[in-house]
Every structure is written in structure tokens, then in C-alpha cells.
Image (tube, rainbow, N blue to C red; front, side, top):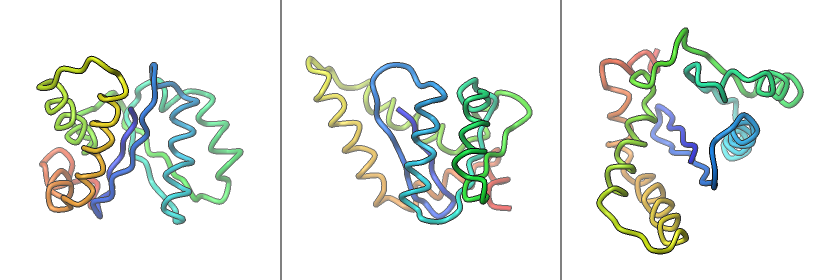
Length: 137
């Protein structure tokens, strides 16, 4: 699962099987850019999929006009990313369920993300956390 939230309370997500890698992250960045139709900014930590050579080549090739900008923290910093708060909520909700069928789990995750799109006050509050207020500047 990949997810990002914006200061104006938009939630973007991509569900997938297997581990997240640079190729999937590139696909996710393209998806968000296509959905917004505007220039987008990702603030990411130094997790390997964010800093992979493949990501740099992808940005140079696909977004030379500056439609997508990636800002990288100096170190791995999950507490500085508002989307980690969103992940935590979804993970907490999922940990209380028992699934026998993987598709049921994926449907519930997707439903949870879709329902949270309507809870803009909660999503916006993530940016008010002391460690995340830099995003509003």
C-alpha cells in the first residue's frame, strides 16, 4: 500500500500485492499527478524506494516540466510525514479484524481510505501535529 495526503485533505492511495519498490512508487507518483492535473509535491524520507536511481530517472524522463517535485528529508523520518498518521489509523483498524480471504481485506482497506476522503477535518489535523507543520509553509 502506498498513500499520501495533501494539506488540503486529499488522500491518494494505491493498493498492491507484494513489497513496495521504486517502480511502484513511480507508478503511484504518476497516478497522483494524473488525478490532480496540477503540479504536485511529495515530501519523502530516505526510504530506499524514494531515493532509488530509478526514481531520479523517472522524474527526469516524465516530469521535466516540474509538474512533480520530490523533497527528501536528510534521514529516515516517519514522524515528519502526515501520511504515516493515516497509515497508523488504517493499520490499527485492520489489526482488529480477522480475514480468511485476501480480497476481503483489500476491499476493507480501500473502503476505509475512501471513507476517510470525506473526513477532511481529521486528515487536515495531521498537518497540525507539531512535527508535521513544516508542510504548511
